[in-house]
Length: 326
Image (cartoon, helix red, strand yellow):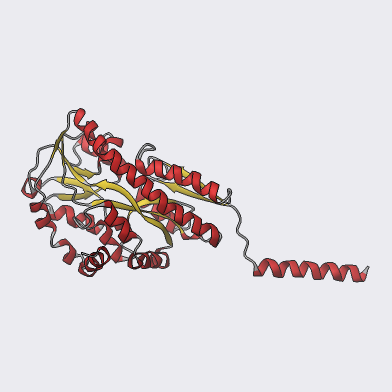
């Protein structure tokens, strides 16, 4: 009896040692929210990402997708993730520049001419290094930064032909320095408010204008509360899929690689949807009675030229140009 008890004790101790030495990774759920509608390319991309991640990890990683600000505005979701909540989101990278200032370059005005350029830079060694620093500084993990939402255009109540026409116009924008200074340089008064409040703010005259990509203009029905869309394309909205580091660290290294690879792959899928649906979205907006106008971009490019230096981004511009070979 004494020998049996000793044997059982040794077995238990061995099991404890093995359990201590070998980390166990239980099934993990990633909760990802977006402020956009389910039929937006980002929403469709997230649903495809969910399905493929769950299949590829054999259910060891589950993904829940929440559309239309169900988990809050983008800034609120980022704050929740940083506080340790199991929350992730698709965010413009400029919001992350308060932790890693160099990341602001992804939202710099008139820097990327095509999605392919942004996709190439998002996978460069230099950019990925900034992503690693983001985890250390903020508690956020960037899974992929190639989710393209389209060119941002000016949405106004009156026609505009250049920066002078935007003087005194209160224009909603994202509350990050690169966005604020870009809109200010273009001549308008930058007014950061949550995306979910833009429709009512335009409707009630709290703001005079906004700026948004074609699929979002249609998805949020902003064509009901604005009269003009001027195709300034001042910023190519390239966004990142980020999650809480605390939730991420519960996933095994093997499954982390699967999730990252699928985040990049589905970022390209969602981005192609953005490109394919963008012109149709603008056509639908025009059919509603909104005037869609082309414009000479030269005056806008001249107006925003000083933004890079103002925000100390000249070094990052040089890195982008080097990666793109231009």
